[in-house]
Image 1 (spheres, helix red, strand yellow):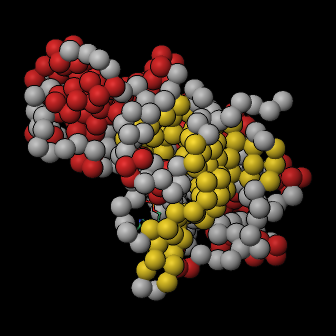
Image 2 (cartoon, protein in one colour):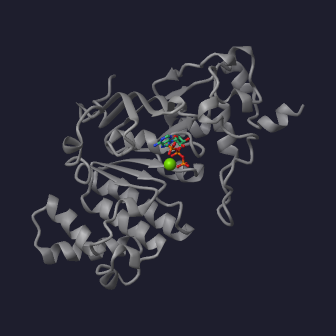
Image 3 (cartoon, helix red, strand yellow):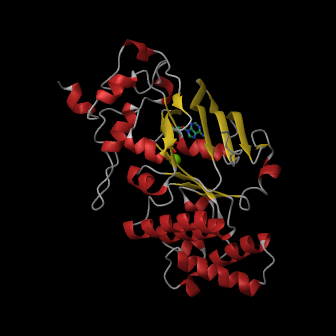
Length: 338
Ligand SMILES: Nc1ncnc2c1ncn2[C@@H]1O[C@H](COP(=O)(O)OP(=O)(O)OP(=O)(O)O)[C@@H](O)[C@H]1O
Ligand SMILES: [Mg+2]
């Protein structure tokens, strides 16, 4: 039962930078697929390579020292190696990106409304007036108060949170086949976060779009994603359907993430309270499992690199035997101290 070709098929993606001290490879062999009408969540600590993985897909890493290898097929077409002039028409029409930093997406010298109108009219034959009405509706939909006024504001005249929303409105305006949202809600308060996630769901339901959603927040993933990619130190630690990943997480790192689902109210923790230590620096990544130094279950074999193994629906890169995994009560700290 072979499924239809996925919308996006990423295989063995590697992102490296030439530096004075030699080559560093923040993304080291990442593979995942995004199906039609599917929301794929990417989670992992800061520096695990989430942003680089998705930005390299659409050619948005501007560093001249970058080297991108592997394969990224979008609707069957290979994107790695395409020139900027070949990628540009894809971005903003087929594939829209919401960045961590909204100023990268908005042009400072035009009003927010002008930018949305241009974007809408580039893809649909609409009069200026109709496109402007669409812009106001979109600004309203992303929770910008007084959208009739906001439409004529320049990006710098909006607060950070409002800019973030304006960028999201712009990304949604072309009804992309694939939306890449890199931490779209981090800077926003909880109510607006919920509105934005609702919009992302609507995009999928009403326009049949697929979404890659990067977030630190396992709670958001559980509510939003169909499939989850857990990244650790530039590699895939675990990959599977949300149902599988939450009902039977296979990787000790995921167990830690799971225990760190932030409270619904109050300040969200910036570090994972349930896993001690921090990810290895880029230059100090071990040859074997990168998580081993923090893992309460490590054993001799972990000084080798664990391959991703499992079923089509659920893969993990961990040497722990399945029987041992099932026996674990998923509280590494407690077990480690006994
Ligand atoms: N242009 C660059 N040159 C060298 N190293 C880089 C470059 N861009 C990113 N990196 C490094 O690559 C690693 C992964 O970066 P990336 O931005 O993908 O992390 P991330 O998972 O998105 O983290 P965050 O959650 O903080 O956004 C980091 O250690 C970062 O410092
Ligand atoms: Mg990032």
